[in-house]
Length: 132
Image (cartoon, rainbow, N blue to C red; front, side, top):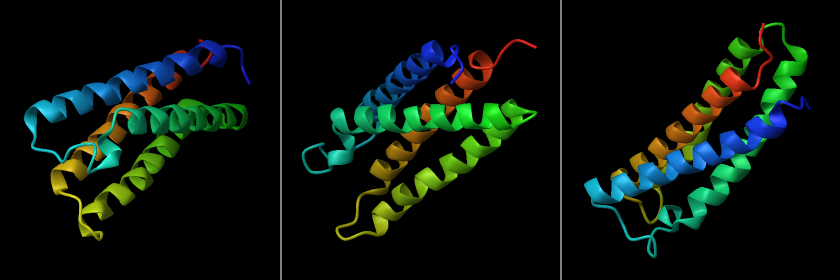
């Protein structure tokens, strides 16, 4: 793994966690949502843990792409977009489950995914590649 990723990795994780928590706080101020006690994905700890783990996996995917691609920025952005699309599928299914989750909660979770994705992709592709 490139030494550059040793400082970009925690930056991507921290920035993504902050973005996810901002989405959570704003959502609770603007949208009627189920309480975290009745809908655990909206607790504080759940989004933090998932963000740390999944952004860390994204960093490893980025390192893999950088090591094998002539145009890692473009390739990683495509890989990350596909990962984002796949990551929201379970959220789309929540309102269809038993018991069903309300759509606003599912939409907030998807917004959290987008926030983490945006920060991660921008930090990695802007700061994680050598200047050329």
